[in-house]
Length: 304
Image 1 (cartoon, rainbow, N blue to C red):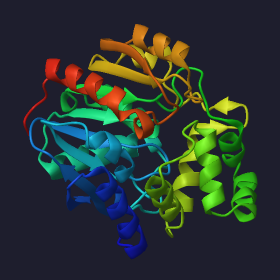
Image 2: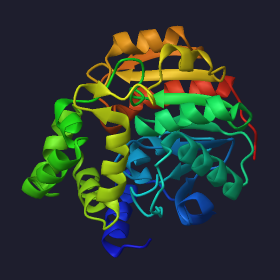
Image 3: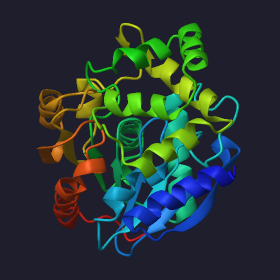
Image 4: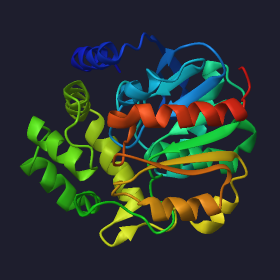
């Protein structure tokens, strides 16, 4: 998918943070189309995955501070320029793993490190469970989606109920004010203006609503998460990939206490708490990047 308005907003973000990238489109059969990837830097490969509803360029503030690595930031299906297809996500776990494997194959990466946030972290965990041979290390920046007994703030749970979600979108369509409320909900207010514009442009893409609501309805319900897809303690114990957890002190999706419980079940770098909310690199990349670099220096992945 190509969209001039999105491309302009993405360029503004990358220019603000001084991140020169090469754009590529990788054939991905599971979405019957292509995945959009931003590549920057040189060195050991790191695949980067953002959360629900936001594109890969959202990670630009962190990309700007990670030197000595080849960073491959991937738009998830429907959230940016990556294609999506009817039926994608009906078996969300299987489709997510297949998507990531096909992206790695298209990029020529055998076993890179994966750095992810929220929904991207959930997908990365599924990949590490189902295909541990494809992940050298995991870095979660912000609480992974639906880990243990976490869910989401009430507005997102309401939106997971199909009639209510559609009504809320009709009453509060994408706007600058709506994006501002989103920033407050994830405790990252005020959003950098270029980031806010990028999110707004993403929400206005034709394919966004179907992808966004489809995932919400599979992961959440009004009372909390849908346990079938949640990362319970048993699932976390299956991940033997070396893992670093970086949680924002004010993350509304899962506080530091949740991070400590996840760290107990994880192998590797343990838990570090930094300032910020659910996307702490937006305002505190200076705290996040050194932790990532130090961990990955100790946990090298394949060169691809």
